[in-house]
Length: 185
Image (cartoon, rainbow, N blue to C red; front, side, top):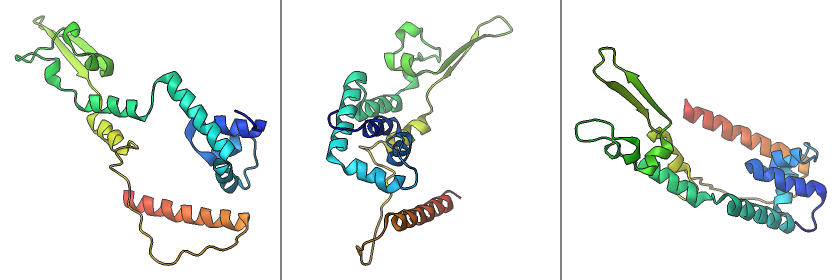
């Protein structure tokens, strides 16, 4: 990553951890005082933005995991059918006959001997389908849970100091969090 200061380079590395610019700014060793404002400025810097994009591309290439990969796996889990692993009499098929998707995503299999000696009880724990659907809905390309934001009225642009802007941003974030908490109740 060319032409980055050590702190800027660290910012890029820290940003990739959680995509939180403010926290990445602080973890990179910059002052926390104006982290909100200055982190945004760093993201808008074309050299830094390019370095972030390059680092993300390298990570995707290295891991072979991107948003599309995650979406495909979530869809596979959603489409798992218990009939794939059970016969018509309700008996569990041998593991070798299970589709690969089941072998990959089952989180627990318990086999318990029945006391009367007549058989076995098998408990199979499969992925939480509701949680899976929630993750599918939150996926960036699905966007099923995106809120609609409407703004009416004038938008005025004026000169404002960094400190005043930070204070206003914190006030607005507080209002958003209060509204979110009311919605959860």
